[in-house]
Image (cartoon, rainbow, N blue to C red; front, side):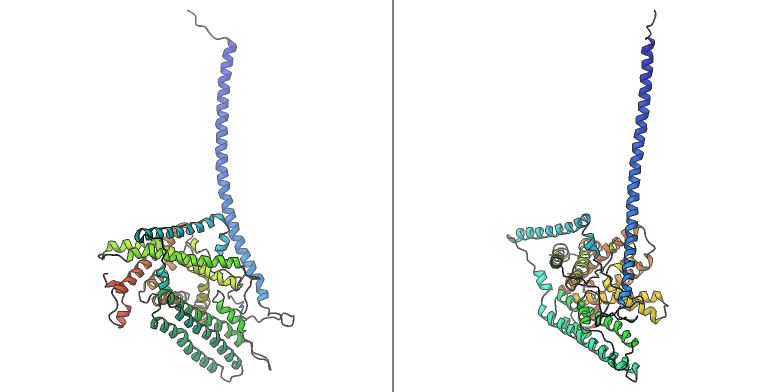
Length: 529
């Protein structure tokens, strides 16, 4: 039996169809591979684009900052116009060109970042959390009391006795305005004609130091202790005391060398700083004295109103954090036995309110408060901080967290120490600045809270110094940014936990005497409330 075979034409067509299918399959696979390669190349090109843009942005920003700094240096050596002519200023003037701080017209970093919608969304998230706090407080009060009410009794308590604070501040302000200025002017008028310049300088320095100690040293402490001011009022007096001391020191430190180096000609009076420049310096948001600063042309009143509203918002934000997150934990209704477990849980429960209070203090003071005074005084240099949140080392964090205080410590602490030691003992200079800063921080907290509990000092002077040397600028990996934030979280949790425990221990177990050990021994170590 014969099997039927297909005709030759049909057989050839089948072969051609199979070949075309194979070819089309290969072409399709090839096209898929090309598309996949193209997608990978596009992703790689996008990454390269982002990296290049970031590098160009950083380099361009550095170049512009350097160009702006260098461009104003020739003008800072010129005196203001006198009879329509510009006069040359000596090289040792108040705008010191020997490595001193140069002020430049620039906005705050957050003001620039808030123009980006992605960053502004984070700001909106914090506002949403504040509204949630308000709603939760209203709901709890309605459940407990059967009515909607927002009671701010804690705020009224914390800011009590504002009348006492006002007159105490006026005393410190009037003293700082008049005594250091006229003492320096009087010393400068006698310096070049006095037979014993060293004796005049030492005598004036001793008398002024004694008066400073009484008015800006003892007087604020007496007011805080004698009148039993509440916490926020205490902090106002103590922080203003520290600010006036730093401002007056900067004024004398910057002005005295100018008077010494510039001998007046016969018949001329010594050149002294103007009273208006010193008055402006006492209110402008910087601790480095200059006779003039870059100024804006006008005040943006809308910006002033928005900034003032943000300050009030941060104040109420802090109130809700303390009331909703801290007080329920550290003011229990029933006594609870102390154990390692309760202590560890208290520390970790304090991390969230601690880091939120840290961010609020930064935003309210270093951004809003300083920008508010900068705007009202047309002060153009708004670099009060840098991008400390991107720090991969604690060295960079300490430099960028608070530029205002850092500049004062660097120029009058670290650099003067190196000048006195002829640029030796750099490590000792750094350690001395750390210790002074830690002591001042602990002094402010001790006077503000009304008890001595050196948590801040131990964290700052011990762990801060250790991290400063171990996590230095050589650490550039993003991992170290994570480590830095972990340390900040834990540090804030420890501080909030221990200070809250000590606050309630002072209430439940008051001191029985006024001996030295009674004053310096924390009550929470022996009190089980």
